[in-house]
Length: 232
Image 1: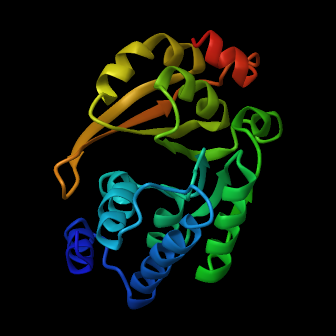
Image 2: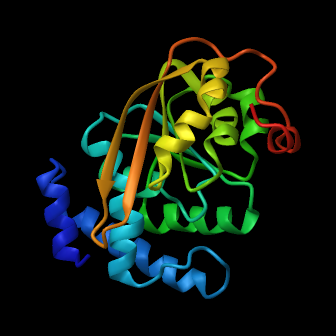
């Protein structure tokens, strides 16, 4: 995806990027490539691929649903989807949870260089953050983190009652949704809608939008070792 295509695709979906925002995306891509030489951030570093498979992919859910207020990005890695969303929608308040300290160092540098405000980068695990910020966020999202049965227990306890849990998945998204039906019910979420979208290279993306209809039982989330060994 060339830069002009990225800008046009955003415009066609109601997002008219300013020169400042375009430059922020370009700088972000440069930082990603530079830092990737020092640490393992992503296998995708070529600019046109980054635009398509990281930036455009991160923005897809926002083209059909209003993503606003406080957003928590669980297991953000190199900052996806939260940083591309923050650039596009500067009014968002972002909390990024990333357990690897090196990646948090990178994320803080991205936030500093791009001049992003109201972005907190936490070097923590989601299940530990849930002890202090339980049911605090309007939107909780995760992209390419874990199977939905495990992911739901990490994300839903952080989501406000009435809030949105957004699971960003590949082509097997609906299959994961079926497998996670019990977990989602126990944790207090129902599937509001799903969207199947396509990247420029033809890759399938399935974004699952879950509405939190009741509070999560207090015994969740468990420690990650237990979640992994015995997912709901």
